[in-house]
Image (cartoon, rainbow, N blue to C red; front, side, top):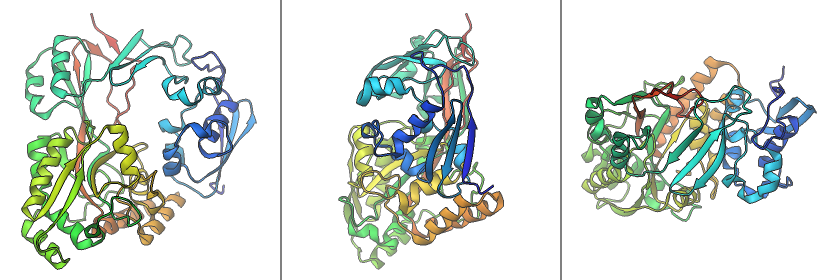
Length: 444
């Protein structure tokens, strides 16, 4: 009744891949390892997602072998949808104790496929779990290959050495459509690709110009995002003006985007004291992502747009894992990043990516290090009410505040796309870009 206590009744007869029982002890272990610093497994993870999405969980208790009670410190309307996220998947305590810090290399869960091997930057193999509670999957084994170049991925698909691929190059879509052996699946994505400007004076990458809203608005006016979407995304995305996608409830379509206007950008820069622009560094992702298929090309287009208004942006890139760690630590002046929704709730975008709670140097989800007290109050209020209409109004106001302060240049909301050999049957695209293969089969 108070919105603080949730009781979960667990499915009986479920086994982990190592043969141990899924039960209340496993649930408590899987949760407490993330938030209890005294838990023996806590030392082996960073648990950033817990800070971003579950910092309001006060306690997780075993009621009996198949009942768990979770107590919150404050109401949170997105809690139940967040409980379907990967970060709270239940893991085998036995396997955690066995592998300790190497558990991430040897994951053990309860799903339809069990882990076989992972060769970094090459492939990962899983095989059917005969004891899966939902019934054995159709395929005996699935191999996920790492092929960074989308053109090479397509060649492998055309040869039949792989059965499906994600993130096709937009230049190849016509070629895919003409191939009778291939099928393209697509769906509006719940995602955003953006350029973040580091506003955190306490971060190593902070540069003074980005502390001035006039500079941030100038950069919004300087970047021709419509041209980027048209010529680089080539119809596989829509220009973004808000942090959340237009398919999500609470989207504020009344906001007018910063129009592409280099002269206005120059005037704002001059007003802010930078009539000749300034020099900075744009950090660029090294990998394709659902919200940004070719970050280097997009960065080059942004670099050219900024050069036109006097901002000299040097492009810097580094290995993906390091990139994430160092942007979370605020080592960048500007960076390209994006987000794929986890639970279909605006809170998962606005709070995680733009609230001051998540502008923590070293574990930031808010890599603009944007800290606005009014926005924080609105986002917390939206979390704590279960009234959907009230939440929608609050999120519309939140988007107005973010738009005015301009910590980002929202670039695009991309479609989800996967390409399959026509012999692959039963795969369904998920709007949150999750991949479910248990009901997939090959037609001979």
